[in-house]
Image (cartoon, rainbow, N blue to C red; front, side, top):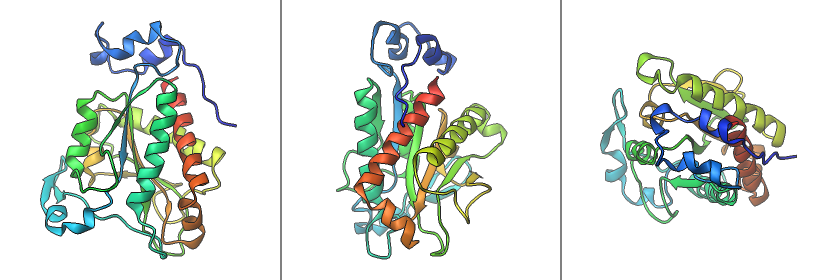
Length: 252
């Protein structure tokens, strides 16, 4: 059973960065509202975009990811049957936005349709930073070995540059991992990370984050069993509800 938990005002405020707690900040006004996430800013990054494939030059141009240069973005992967990752990430993100907004949250998305290209991975991070997101999630699905199964949670690497978000992101990752195991039938990855968790230093979305953030590979699109789940609307909505549960637990 999913837990759409009412959050005590003090619990919400204790999860916020100190710099965000000015009297005018929307999260502070949570005390005056009945919906549990009213005024809380949450960031969602649905990986890739539906027409990225139309402009290879755009995708290949280099952007600074906080440590080195990397490609602006990629097309994403797809199932063996041709179901594209950007469609999956968009549908889960839209369902997640709907569920969060129903609880009063202010949701910031890094893209607004699945019919365009971009933005680049560095700009996606900046969008969520500029919005002063309290917590953010990057939604993806992997294109791993066909024999491999399961979800993986990618977190900022443990170093001085990420010192402001390491512990909070790891805490969010632990909560999200537990929620995935409790609420979905997707196992932890058999091929990525340790017990489904890995720390990455080569991703702009994590390197540049100023808020607690993780990237979740929700499953392996190249595995037949995972693919059947990832392409099912019911499972996509279950993932969204699982993410809501994890976000609420994190904030409480």
